[in-house]
Amino acid sequence: MPAVATYLAQRFGEGELATTLGPVLYQRTQGHPLFLVTMVAELVQRGVVWEAASGWELTASPQAVPIGVPENIRQVIEQQFERLTPPEQAVVEVASVAGVDFTAAAVAASLGEVSEVIDTRCAALARQGQFVQAHGTDAWPDGTVAGRYRFGHALYHDVVYARVPAGRRVHLHRQIGRRLEAGYGPQAREIAAELAVHFAQGRDGHRAVQYLRLAGDNAMRRCAYQEAMVYLTRGRELLETQPDTPLRAQQELDLRLALGPALMAAKGWADPEVEQTYARARMLCAQVRQTSQLFQTLRGLWRFYRSRGILPTALELGEELYRLAQREATPTYLLEAHDALG
Image (tube, rainbow, N blue to C red; front, top):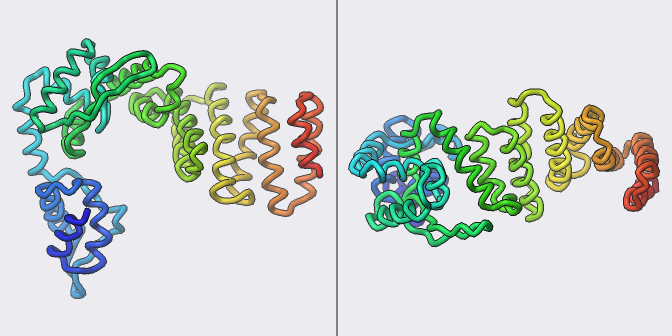
């Protein structure tokens, strides 16, 4: 990062531009001199960075700066890829679908090869020091042990991934997701965010939503409330593309009830989104005839109205909580109902 800041200061002078653009370029180029210089030149050529009377300026916010792969860098990487043998090309292509960081076992599953064979090929590629680098060993809960690797640079990953036809990418993402899911078994929730990406890209909406919810739960346990909201909101958006079925309604209910606590923690109990989330959950409880989640839903609504000082509605919800607790004969429900009424 200091080297990137130094180059930008030399190229554009000391000022705000070097400070704001530096982190974006470092994240994209990882400080690689050729990639950095080429990307800066392209941003200037496209007018994203331009010289005004007062000095160099950005035409957009740093987060909105469109930074693709410059054509000359793409050509260099393409030429390097073409020099690989067909088996090596196959490994690198599948690895690009597995991710910037990947395991030989996941690649082997997609290629229908023995893990040890792919591990050997990946190790050979790593020794060449061009596309991938060795990054230790991975051991899965099912006993699978294989080498872990990562692309030497994100741009290598991006160029190779773009070569894979769209239909094949979908197929490979689904295969990799299922192999990881099987390899982790009951502990799959530990890699929920990774699995969500593969199943979303593999057009398996049901599994993608399931793991987005689990990724949200993982984030909540770390008190990473904003991160949890991102996962759970993404899951809700993905559900909107799925057919309207009882399964979709149940998954939306699960997402809403996971999102409610994240919203309350990040934005406060009285935020309007809290009411919207739990009100929708209440409708879904009636739709799927799910009474076991109704108490949690009503409790969330009660917190919102009590925090807003709308006490008559809060009292009605407290009374409904009490009736539900009596019907379910659950001691903890009765305790919470009495608390709400109090």
